[in-house]
Length: 256
Ligand code: NDP
Ligand code: 8X3
Image (cartoon, rainbow, N blue to C red; front, side, top):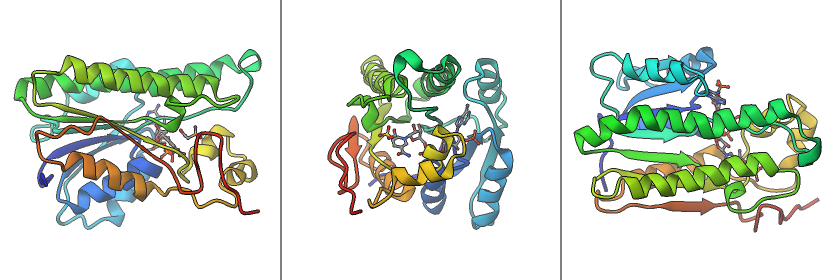
């Protein structure tokens, strides 16, 4: 098993859910963490909750969909933080659950700009340094939605299908380097995801998980950590994980 001790890990979308869980797992293993999200106060709370004496953090208030902000954040990392070893492209969201022909175009723009373009910007600005240093690992958080489109999921599913294709393409383009690329593609995980999708409608969001035992963010973080800590000649290309109560994007066993 590879150690992540003192490895520099950049996690986007670290202010909540899967990203925050990844931050905890990597912090416990002694990594140096660059945590990025728009809600800086949430990143600060995460740091306060951890054992700050032994873990080093660098916080970035960053909107991944803002290309120039991403470029400037990466190019102006302070000394000791710029040589990123592990990039976890986790920031993402869904907006709405509408028929395509009735969808809100602004929602589409936000999902595409965050889930696809944001992931691409981070990749484009971080991976050249990995190539130069001959080391690195990129983990993209995809989704079951990138494997199976579900009714009204149209554009969100499209963005996750794009993440899957981009992960595959990046792996191909990095062939001949030691840099690894992994896509971790969960099914249903209970986070703020549905609250964001339904714009704060908590009742509707909680119904998504009603009567099932969903994955937790920690379950997904465990898988990310497993992939990153395999021996350096092992590349886990793709992991699809879902709760026992789920068999596909649309087949869910509800006990009520
Ligand atoms: P959360 O809503 O709990 O977390 C989403 C994170 O993404 C937040 O930290 C948010 O931070 C960040 N984020 C969103 N937009 C931006 C942006 N423009 N710039 C920077 N950060 C941004 O949801 P999850 O933890 O569930 O989602 C994490 C990833 O997992 C997403 O890519 C999602 O698509 C994927 N996923 C989720 C599943 C689920 O069922 N929950 C299943 C499969 C995949 P902030 O708002 O502070 O910027
Ligand atoms: C999140 C899982 O099935 O709600 O990517 O799209 S799903």
